[in-house]
Image (tube, rainbow, N blue to C red; front, side, top):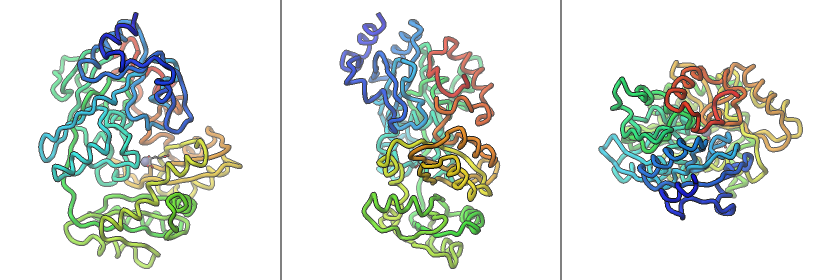
Length: 436
Ligand code: 2HG
Ligand code: ZN
């Protein structure tokens, strides 16, 4: 029987069938997506991961892969009774060189950041979920995070990856696969593939050194000035982050962290700049006469970041939010909130996110629209598409948005072809990404 075979591979302690032990894996972080699994299997090595997948493949057992369980689109919980493979124990870390770090899929972002720091370097992707989010999941969703304007998303840091295919074949280096291998080219599609093509076992990630001087500014921006300000900030060579939120959001986090909101207004833009020379000078020129609070060291900057980073948890304390992770062009930023509010009568709408230009140079923002209370989900999706945006960004499609995936992703046909080649039995994350 499959479960006994799995126990023989990972040991009784790491094949959880007891409902109490499974419970934490069966519900997502937000509490919105809840399923059930016959077992949670926690391989402790790549060899075990490979053996687990080989067994599941032979038994035609669908699986869902989970890392830190910080996903927000129901993509890593067993909503259709899949077996759950947790990669949390695959957390090995090794700094390979001043520009390269190798991380197991289950290494948390915080551990990766600490390892880079200990080697005098830093890692380009950062999110508030750093203590729980794991590298495998961040690759699966192609997370962007708060420094996306500077470094791009996870895919841009991915130098190489070791993966296990659906039938258990372990490929230690996707970069080294030969053209006649079925996984040739997979490295270019891994980021954002939501676990449907292969299971990430480990990844080689780019690290680098940050310039020593830092400036962080929270700027109060009237709606009519927003686009121009973002554009000017983005042109600063020192820019590391451009984060957007509003008065409602800063008041929420201020209450949550027991402080007074430093500013109010239509938009608050939190900017971080880093350079060899004092970045506050050029940042100050961009801010001009707008009301702003400026910090010129790490500690004071961190205090300003608290108002931004506490948002996800502060919203969750109000109830189970409906989360929309969307992309909109800069010229639609001012219309998003009122139009979502119209689709959520009686609900409370929170909006925040990351501004940057995409790889084609189009000014875009990845906004997180959170609604607590009543909301017409499809109505919100319609609003986003009507504004020329996309209904899925750094959190992925998951199960939550697969009915709308065709318009949100242009590469589904290609991904389907790769999946059919690598996982013809369709056991890997079978209920995410692709439209039903
Ligand atoms: C962020 O940028 C994260 O804060 C989470 O992507 C967003 O909680 C959310 O909706
Ligand atoms: Zn985000």
